[in-house]
Length: 158
Image (tube, rainbow, N blue to C red; front, side, top):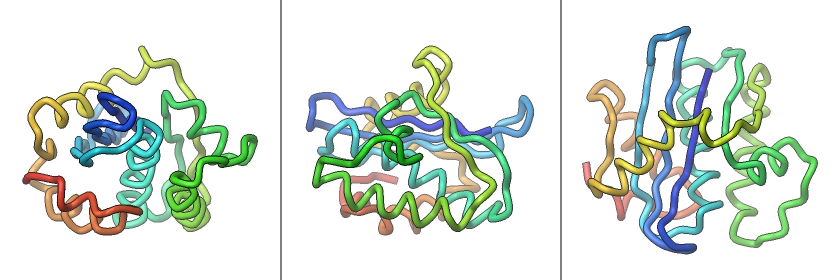
């Protein structure tokens, strides 16, 4: 199971994205990444993209569910809602492309209180102004930040 979140203090404002990947009760990977000034929805999409990049690199044949507390992100990604905001178009296109590369992955909306671990990591990355990640995945985070639809790496301190 994968839990993702994005946070912005202000809209736009300082933002971050986070992800927690679990197998049973064990945390396989987790990260929180500051993104510079972004909207909350851009941060939510960044959380999704980071999780999809992780799956593409480490578990390309994975089957499971990505949980997000952003109903907008989930509804747009599964195609129920249109993406009207121009700033979200590149995020949505990239997410659609990645999801088609990993067909066993589904996306579902959860209540915010069910997403505490990813939320805490997103807030920690904002509070500490740095990437929060286990050493094993630091090279991964460094390589995928340049793939986001904006230059996140210029805002990120490792």
